[in-house]
Image (cartoon, rainbow, N blue to C red; front, side):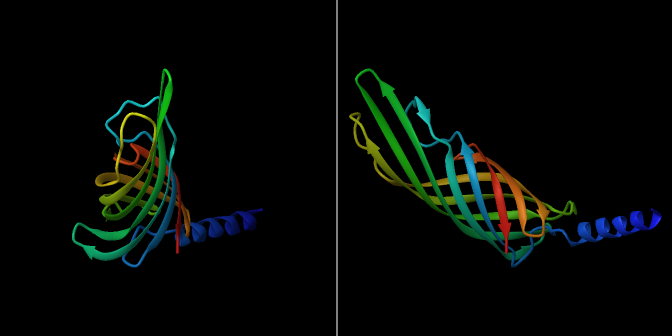
Length: 175
């Protein structure tokens, strides 16, 4: 029995030490997320869909602090609709963006990636309704987030910010 406990302890220690390190230079991550709320449009909506997003980021350079700066891309999709007597207006957004983030590594908490950054995007708008016309336009957003790695290449993440979604959560894959 003692022998099994020792083997289990060695296995547990090895699995913990092999698990993911914090975000470093050269790290590549793909995020798949679902977002709630958002700041697009200057109109009152009756309903909105969840925002679906995919993003990629790569650790580009180490900076003092300690931390790493990442750059990457973003693709998102979201709809808003407004129902009123005699009609329905619907806005569909496809968002294409470039993101940059600072990943803070100073806490020395294994498996945790804390970050904050900004995104410059182009919001492609498709509109159907009778209120007027709405055009596509550039946008900018800020965000803060955290990612927790459960395995070497798999994590969950949560981000808060202003823009595409007020709160996003999902899964991340590192390669």
